[in-house]
Image 1 (tube, helix red, strand yellow):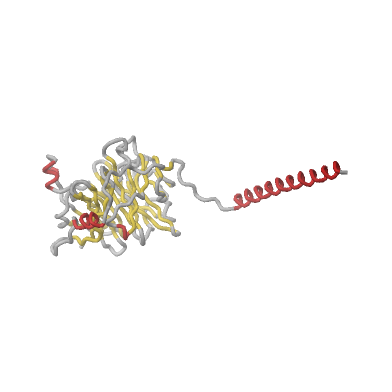
Image 2 (cartoon, one colour):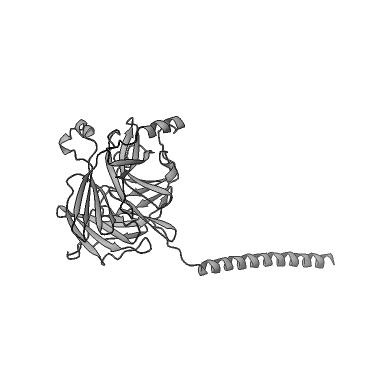
Length: 360
């Protein structure tokens, strides 16, 4: 009798185990089925790797006192200046040179820097700073490898997402870019060669030749994208329709514009309506003199060209004379034609900073 009871008990236990296993298998099967039914999400490029270790910053803690001193290193502009100071001295990581910037409509600035020495030479660092964080330091960044010099950076917003655009697929570690690309900002990650969407640009009027040293800019309303690249000693701009913040059709060029090269060092461009804006200039005259390059100094200039009328302008920028280094590193144009510049500076030659100015 006891043996029968034991067997019945064993059968019950085994039955419960089997039931538990069946239930687990059924749950797993349902989960897989639900995942299969969900719409596919666009995957970020497979070249992303996670950065697990924080960079050794070797910088003093940004105390309130130090923050005030750094902000005070960028004084307000004088009445005869062409500039209006908007955001003073955003402190960035050292040993990297600012190259470009952009901002979204509501919340963030994005800044690119290139490493010029060490094991990270020619890598770009893309730092994100909140509007209210300008003047502070942040470690929220991405690393971009083989993305070229980072000359121009822009963004487009669609369906609540921000897409960052720049040049990509550089030839070698420090060579020119051969494509343009866009991607989402993901702190602590590394992109190699390209982002999620990448486009090689056919040169209009050529027999299938592709553009080199190319960078994008986006209209303020996010409907047009311009690609600028160097060609035969000049510069060519090709305008495209932009869809969903991340899609162009490289063979469907709306407009092609060819201009002479800028006399000063090219530092970025933007578009607004039918007008192309370019920025040029070197670091300050005194710093160029210290480097033995006084003859290569070029003042900050903004050039415009309206391709619908052929009208052009040149504005030599007066101002920002009190900051050291004083190299222009990016231009952004709002939908109403308001122009904004980023100018790099140093604080006591220890910290790399960027300053954002409106142009009168």
